[in-house]
Every structure is written in C-alpha cells, then in structure tokens.
Image 1 (tube, helix red, strand yellow):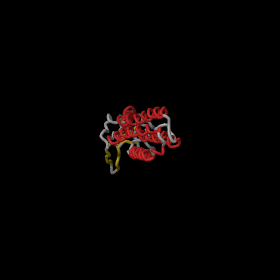
Image 2 (cartoon, one colour):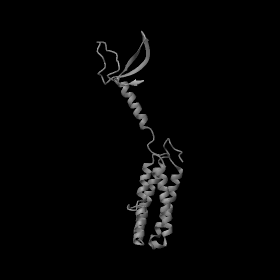
Image 3 (cartoon, one colour):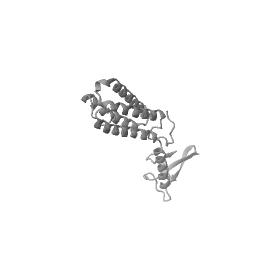
Image 4 (cartoon, one colour):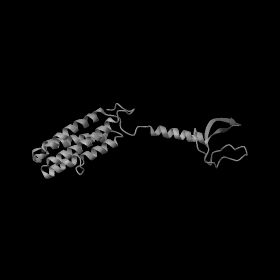
Length: 191
C-alpha cells in the first residue's frame, strides 16, 4: 500500500527525533503490521524521491501507450475505397441536369451517410469521423458541397467538375490513408 503522508497518520521520526508529519516530499510504503502490548503498530519505510518520480513516470508511460485511435477495420477500408470509385463516376454526370440524376445522387448520399454512421459508431474513431463529416458536409467544398451545388444550379461546367473530382479524390485518399495507417498498429485486426 503506497500513500502520501497526512496529518492524522503517525510517521517515524528522523535521526534527530523530528516528525516527518509536515513533509510533503516523502512517500511511505506501508509494511506489515506488528503487535506490541495489544496495540497494532505499523512499520513505514521511506522511498526516495527519485524512486517515486520514476514510478510516476512509468505509470505515465503505460497510460500514454494505450491506443488513442480505433483499430484497423477492413470493412471501413473497403467501404471508403468503394465509395471513392462510386462517387467520382456520378460526379462526371454533373454536366447533365440534376433532375435526371436525382435517384443516383440520393443513393450516393445514402451510402455516404451509412459510411459516416459506421465511422461514428466505432470507439476511439474521432479522426475518421471528423474526416467523414467534412466529406459529406453540404456547406464544405468536398462531395457534400459538390452535390448541393449541382442540385442548386442544375448542372455544372466540365472544368469545375474536373477540379472538384481532384479535390474529392484527395479527401477520400485522406480517409483511406487514415484507415490504412492503422494496419501497423498493435491493435490491428478489428472488424
């Protein structure tokens, strides 16, 4: 049992007979109790400051080594790759009137929402979830914003479509890189 000194705990005296009661820099380890005249006495031994600091550092390192990101998921990786391919093709159709592509855009938005919800539902997956939020945000300049602009304007120019495809592709590559970067972690092999 390791504890820090308190005012109510009896502490041993130093060689000059002074109590260590007021010292907040010493850590004591409780040793086994022993009895003397029916009174239970406790034997305390002092740990040096360097040992206490070392123990604190070891505990900090152990806590810091716990995974802060979700483990690799083949399903998430496969989903992102498929959505990248399935998103860039319909973008090419944005030269046509939006009214002709409503069903395919609705289906694409549904699949994007499913991917976002999958990412959001995984524990410690905040980074991927944030990337998906940016990707599907209708006010942003990635896929969600592209689809909203196409819907509002009716059709888009080929030069805008080409540039938007490049930006959206980069966004998907960021999500793919984030997910594939989890392969090297010791936590690999997730769902």
